[in-house]
Image 1: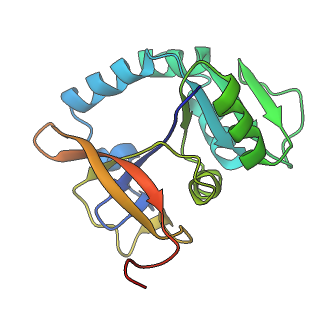
Image 2: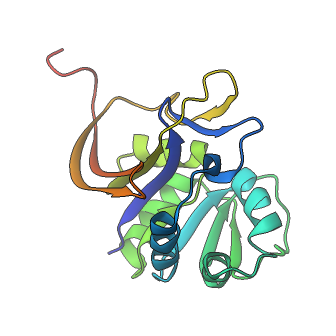
Image 3: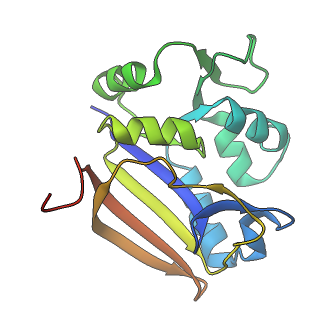
Length: 189
């Protein structure tokens, strides 16, 4: 049985990107990049939606660094009703069915771990369905209040999070890994 991890990088105020900011908010350091490369060597199935597929295929599909090579080699499952086949990014398969049903089945039948790659709407629906085993964020020490784009947690169900791992990279980036539990509402109500 496969496990499913939702994985994000965020600003301290919960954005996934900021207008005009470079990738990783320009704060990637050697420890973090080495960890990303190590993570990229793990055999996982990457789950993504159409927006993430289009973005990642455009630059990872053509890059030659170790992380991109690992992502190019990985199996990628793309959930979309707008993308048409054939998919140009190697090892990508298109799924038009309900993502929750498909991922529930994948968790039962896939031997490799499942991970989301970006894909805010997909991740939100998988969390709401109670399918996520781990929730991991790397918090970058910036606030992108005016320029922030893609608020990560808007529309999420209420969750309690049990911290199971943490790490600091390069003296400034915080990795936090949780086991999430979907709540019916605030505790005590």
